[in-house]
Image 1 (tube, helix red, strand yellow):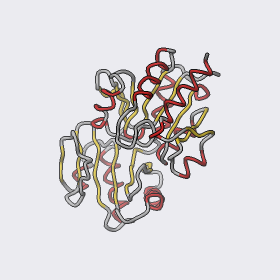
Image 2 (cartoon, one colour):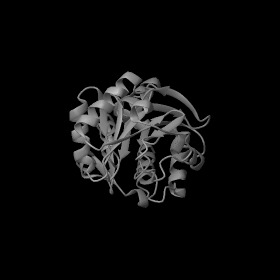
Image 3 (tube, helix red, strand yellow):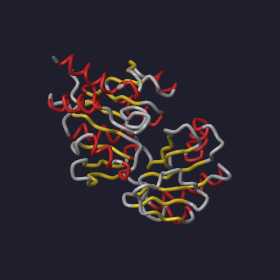
Image 4 (cartoon, helix red, strand yellow):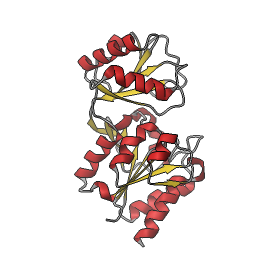
Length: 266
């Protein structure tokens, strides 16, 4: 089958290191969509971090945010679908990780709010949010797109493994950072599930999808897609899982991929 949909991660993949979208990438996205190819941004970002990306790419299309938990219309900036961690499960997640990871701190991403425990240093993550500072047990009393857990001095791959072991089938743990931060979604929710559901609604099969990413939270999406691509700057596990490589995010790797897809069509 030909390619009907291109799914791309944002940070470290489509976006350059300074957070911008290059002119070449904007043009490649526009040309792909003119040719009838659906381009979907599939990100760990919360929706409050999507406004600048929407502006940079023309306020059209759909993004899958919070590692698959949210589907977001970039034109209207409205939530189209949400698979949150419900409060009862959120409380169990907090209890399990407090027991397994002494010293862990929590924050939550919700549709309209970012919340954090008092000891959580912001590092810019609260931009654009209504913020609540409270104990984790209070933070998870509302449905959460993601629960964030951090231990700054622990290797992120090791931390995710410890967290997932503690959580079992209660929730899904992953990461997309170079420091000790775990991103926790509802059980079974991932970039793959969010993308698969949207593609099915469009009548697009996995064999018609190419996905590109750089970090472990992209692995389920890459495994589901018919064609898996890693940018050159990707995490070693992503490089190993990919069918092929493209250039780094700073060298317009996604634009090169889109241009190749278009050339194959012609």
